[in-house]
Image (cartoon, rainbow, N blue to C red; front, side, top):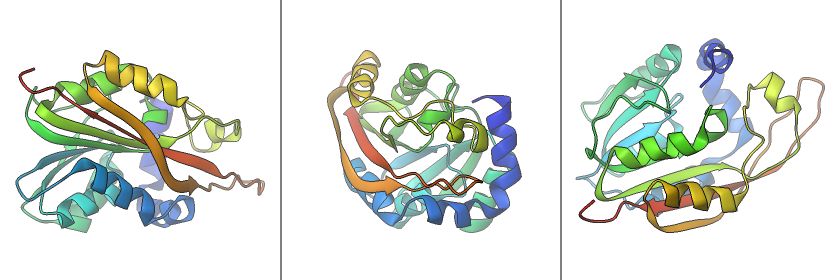
Length: 211
């Protein structure tokens, strides 16, 4: 993630949950948690945790959750929100996760990939930390043309073609890769009042057993 993106998220951390509610609803989280097949024995990493929107669902399913974010202010918001023994916050970047190889059952990443400097590398990192049989589940924006999001919200990528997501998952060694609809949209509004409505996909892949 770029320094500009990091500074932006530091500045909005205190109001991020309020902002998030205007962007998209709980249906995104419900779809991600269902696809992740989380249970009480799962160890989950939420990449780009923000203030904990996705982590909340994983914790409700009984998992141990490690939240990773490059914004210290976001991590502090998440710590204050949860404050339970099953939650840990770690400072780190999406392309260099502060987690050992093969330690994690599920990696979740919601609306974070479009902030990555190198999305294929970020997916490779997610796959690296998975145990054999573990799962990566990403929810993010389909490709769009709202250039103002690069300036106002420091989006590096204007969404993604689903074919590229499939290829990057496969290049990271993941199998049984699927990309489906969440049936949800992201609805940001620009400073001048322009409204966007961007469809959100869900990508899922498995790390093969014995790898």
